[in-house]
Image 1 (cartoon, one colour):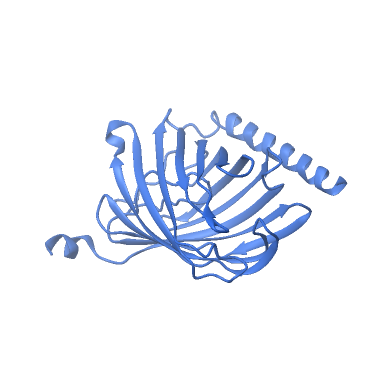
Image 2 (cartoon, rainbow, N blue to C red):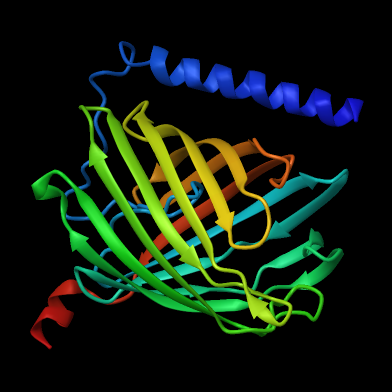
Length: 278
């Protein structure tokens, strides 16, 4: 218990320091703007926040998002990787999504701890509102398939509906959030779960930003899970991004802590000119 308390205190201190940096760097980087690489789109990812991006992948581009997370829960440590999400811009307002099976080690399944590959998922994301109106919003529909290991798989076809949005507050600040509904199979029935989230993102430099986020899970069965989440991302190039994030639970049903990092990149799969003529 002393080790967990010390770890939680360190996370609280780190979160306060990151929040201070978010607030304190406004005067230092107020002139910085995101890179403009001509007509080449700059990578925008769903990770590492709980809140997904409110825009879709660029038309004709593949976006590959990958990561690793270590989680502490009930005096147990677990990890998962590669957290691969593949997004393809089918049109200017529609993307196709594929969630590859994730490997979980010592994962809390609710009825015990197990290891193995998780379920895969497929879905679509549709842009509803674009930023010229000062507001972005998208709709995501996903379905997971019971392809994972016996100890990890939900053994059901589980739908998800998500509605991410974002709105610029000022030159360097953006507010964003998401409301999601999940129907995970647990035992012989589904456990409808609502998940609201809200974040504030600060553009620190033309390549780097940081965020602070609240997310909560509210299942029909089981206690609410409240999380405080902080992270940052850095664009190595217009097509590559590194990220780092950490967080901790604010309720007894939530995990104690988690910490992770990721690498994402995008590739042009279909040239716009050729696709537009077809």
